[in-house]
Length: 462
Image 1 (tube, rainbow, N blue to C red):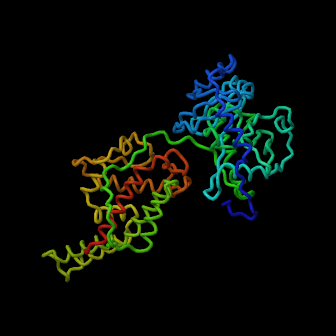
Image 2: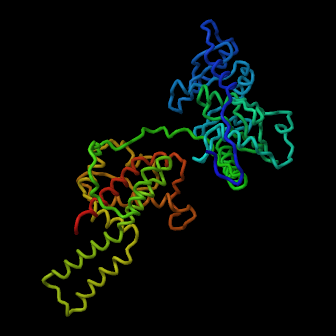
């Protein structure tokens, strides 16, 4: 299905001619084919980036996908040998591979190129995105060498279709920079793309900065330019895109101590409010948006704040009334009960979360969550999530519950609150589609464990 917008968009698939050409290029392998001397030099330069030659045919060279992706043979990258000259020209300019995005840069030229992908789950993929972008036209008339044709950027024709121009380029320029959306250049394709028969990314966004003071400065300028471009493409053109990022490279940590899955299905005995059930179910489905998954589990906890506060207040009042020294004729004794009610009504969200964990979560099960799973250094000061509490499950740690409470709450604040809020001035926001967001897995497991414990405790009578 195409994305619903004010205009009817037509999805385009690769035509048979293109698929046959790509298949032929990758299958016509002859053991006698060997790289030329010039190609061997290119292969050596490419290998310095961790991308290795996998095969040679009469018409093409096949390389492994960049190791920053999960390497699989089906993700090898093929490029026509006729493009060796253009590829060599790019590599001679000291190309570097971005550590953040799936792209390349040539710092001395102020050039950056990053693979482009859809940022909407409603589009059908790379071919659909390419077709939709190819229908756009540039609104500016600012002249630059790339646009006039004097110094065009090389772009591969990674697809062909009767419905689009194979040489499509969307080029926009200003006095300080140029931006172009088109097919990837040979170097960007070989060093950062993946997918041999059907490349995963058919478009890249290219930036030429005319004033930059260094690679770090160039990266920040590019990010700012792209964020503005992506925003306007969304609100003006109804196309949602984002720059492709390398996967988070840390070991994916998952809970290993969950109870074994039961094969039998019983008539349900757990009773949940509809709101709680919806939030819990949605949190499990939001795997592609870790911050949203985390917040949904946290909202499950929020649903029980009033009940936990009431439970704690009732116990405190019962203790006061059961105290043999309690005298209802003395104002100071009655005021103690009044203070309990005031404290409950005015409790901060952090205090409410602390009360919930103390009242509804079994402490031994919570400690087991940390001790029975190999979380590595995730919950320590060396972990990937900044601005949150470290947790030690050691039995001697009397601050254990407080540490869990503060970590859960601080991460929630980093996701929810904007950085210009003075209450959280020293806490950076936890942005979606960031390395920190990708590393949230163990913290999502923690807040899920808390939600399960709270739901379980809610099934019992006080």
